[in-house]
Length: 205
Image: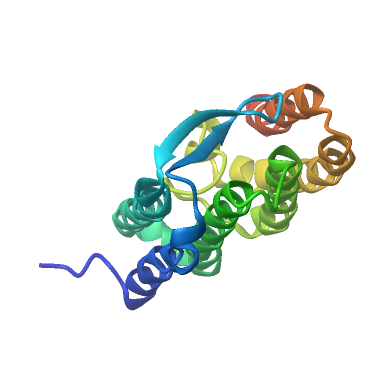
């Protein structure tokens, strides 16, 4: 049977699971119920027992990473985007550690403005991914996948060059909104940033 997962995939999954370590280091200092989700008012609206709060997010993200790797391995054209695939695989462990860090610091009352930290992370991710977008070659796993981009490599390339510009500038524009706590305008802008490249793919010639 063809090998589906690479050593890089396995290493990324193990690294993601290592995000549980900080939680267990401070386990005895955590409250029995830990906030794991926050609304747009920056208030917690979902809680988990502390063991689940430590273990569940890294496990879910590790499984998500493996699923993404398996899907990617079925598309031979992703070989042209190997560097981009590797970057995406290692975003997941970073996100797992940041997410766990935010949950733990809030539970320990060391972090109050969770929304700003999450927003800054989203902004940075948009900037980083925006810089990689123009390097993404046509495939069915990563990128702006519309009927036109998947059927015409020239449209794919134009769309992803445009998306790279929009996501990078958009990520920079989001930074002050999140810092100032303007979450609703920030989420509206994020929606626009995501939709514009897809719309562009249908009108570009």
